[in-house]
Image 1 (cartoon, each protein chain N blue to C red):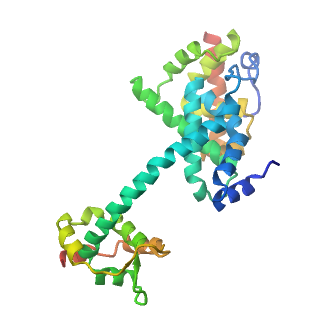
Image 2 (cartoon, each protein chain N blue to C red):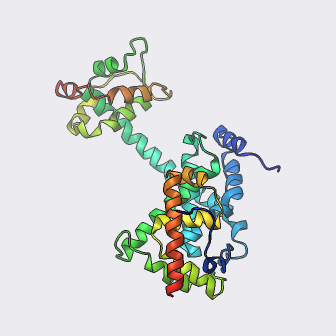
Length: 146
Length: 182
């Protein structure tokens, strides 16, 4: 097979220049279009984040009760901290949301006095998710205990 | 403002303080090359505009995770290629055209394109190119029009150089045949 530039005459005849044009000011205006789209896309994200955050806090309580505080703390392996950050819990709940029992919400909200640090960011999230997602962990026993 | 190199632009983007400004410079720097790459695949200017916008939006969302093991341009080129192919896939479904079939609708697009500025011979070549199978068309465009090296194409398409050479060879043969027939 000859892979060198042996371009047949019929192809060569039309040259390498593309026979297309663009509207005159297209490339001057395009970066502005992207900026506009980026700022347009930002707004729903803010709203979505707000709603998501509220839902996530609700889910957090469900999850906490479902998993059991002691269970979470064991999984976190974080005996020295008094707080578990919101981010850690939100991601955990999202990850295992298909296993949560919605009926636990009311009692969870009423009964829960778990100390939560809703402000801080927790760098352990990824490790937690990774740890929880390992195949050898049987998550159901925690759920069934409640 | 002086042109900044890609690493510097990425650094500024990630710093966060001037994220949009840094990204704006990336857009300005690469928009034309990516535009022409996409245009050759989707043909119509309006469709190209949509795909190019989506390419940069995806890039904006993913730039924090870009590991810089390839050049920024290669990475953008890859996003643009994927966006173009998925656009064509959607369009094929729209036209109820079986996957793998030649893209008949692209010939129609070519004929109705108000931004086509070529002569009859160029139209003939473009029509022959859109009749190629997708992969061969992609490789032919990148090699013949963009004059990229096989190694560069290989990095963008994640395909071996040998396979690319074969695709290019087959594309040339088919184009020659199409042009002779018509």
